[in-house]
Amino acid sequence: MSQSARVVVTGAGRGLGLEFARQWVAAGDQVIALARNPSASEGLADLANQSDEQLVVVECDVSEDASVEAAVRVIDGHVNGVEIVVNNAGERGHTEDLSSLDLDVVLRVFNTNTLGSLRVSRALLPLLRAGRGKPPRIVHLSSLMGSVADNRSGGSYAYRISKAGVNMACRTLAHDLTPYGVVTIAIHPGWVQTRMGGSAAPLTAEASVNDMVATIQDLSIDQSGQFLDRHGDPLPY
Image 1 (tube, helix red, strand yellow):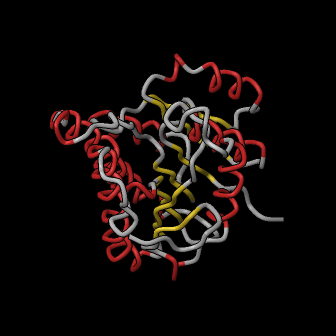
Image 2: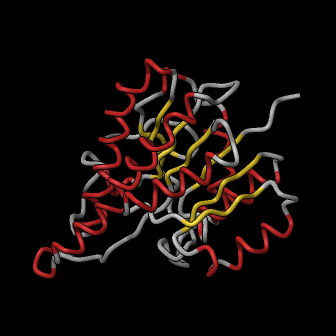
């Protein structure tokens, strides 16, 4: 019988983050759900009521150093190691073109999406190194919109730049963390029916996360630094 995992998910108040929390709780794992405003999430409240203490909800704004540091102190009080970290928290910005580009928005989105992933990964590294069983895994939610090779339409500067930054941060982390046996990958969830993806998206959050969880469970150290689709197939950087 496999040992349950201890999983940290950022941006767990809604969308993909909440669905990750649901699926790992249902699998019997312990989930630490980080959310910027957890009291506003009915989904997290419902999951906490059903989870029989498998779910720990922690307030965390990944765009602020102090908030991440405070959240990690809380996590440290609940677990002595972590097997999986999912850097899911993010924002879309606007679908701006060059003429309407607001550089303050670009900076804000980059701070949340790119630097937020780095803040959380760095802060949780000691707990990841204390993980048990399979190699500890850091998963960064990215997007094909962050692929330089796949950019065929332009626009959406803030989001594209931030996700390209996530991909580069992941690749660089892989070089630094491989000696510690920590796997880090970027993953494209597909076009999903969330507040960010919109109702026209072909994938439900449940289907996307189900595929990603299966991929995350099977990650090996030789995949560290890769940019993958939800099925685990490599994507162009």
